[in-house]
Image 1 (cartoon, rainbow, N blue to C red):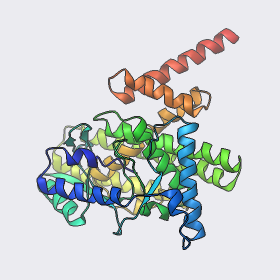
Image 2 (cartoon, helix red, strand yellow):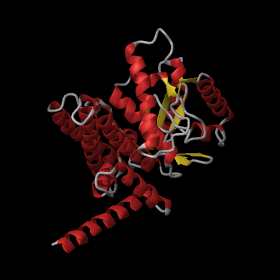
Image 3 (cartoon, one colour):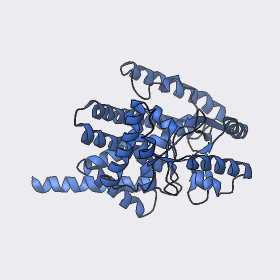
Image 4 (cartoon, rainbow, N blue to C red):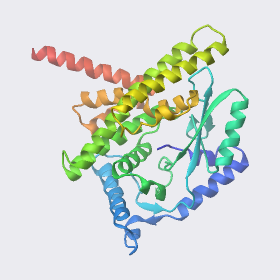
Length: 356
């Protein structure tokens, strides 16, 4: 669930080969778009695909009519992708610093990841960064946003997800159309994750009823996001503390392995009690700074957004409006949200004092 910045790639100062490939692949995706209502008329569609396509249309309507998101024509069409994985996302970070390596794109600014349509191209770029002393991480992605520049289609890869995850992804990507802070990658992805998770809960409650199987799964999915966000934040804090110490780099590299090992053991113990947790495989990963940075890009300070949601009377529309107003004033967006949250908490204290 990532905003690839494909459009920015096409018109940026990237190598001509990257630009040509990105433009070609994006063009294929857009050329293959079919309106979902028309696609639903195909006689050979299975019941599961049929239900998921109708679900996407319902999510679009909910995002537009209830949440007031900038939906436009996004996710009103379907596009088939003729390869196993849509894109390969490269993330990098210094070996003794949790600071993402960034790429600059015209219009969208600096972005802490870069998408490739070829696994070999992603691996070659990663090798160059590793030779320069960076940790790297490559993962696949099945979705993207052009930030409203084009009417993004539902890609065939997304239909392999369960209904709750599918709804989360669509809400997430539609929010990118609604709010995007230039050069603030971690904020953009984390706030979109918050909106995706919370929107799915409200959507399934309104569609199938409170306590329905879909509603309960959406609640648990968001709880798991919050749990892992808290865990990965503490792990990142431990690494930051280590990297700030005035000791030789070799010692930092040795000690960070102890931090990684301890973190994996702690999470493995937690997952033993929660075997279906959506982040259950974290303890099986090979860790480096780029992997941690990747998680922090999507899960940073989720508890702040959740606390603001609570402060706004558990009204998601009000929470979204408050966030948009706060970051519109400029400055570092996480600090703007923290300041807004402090203001809401102070107002609640004053109100409680008056009532007493």
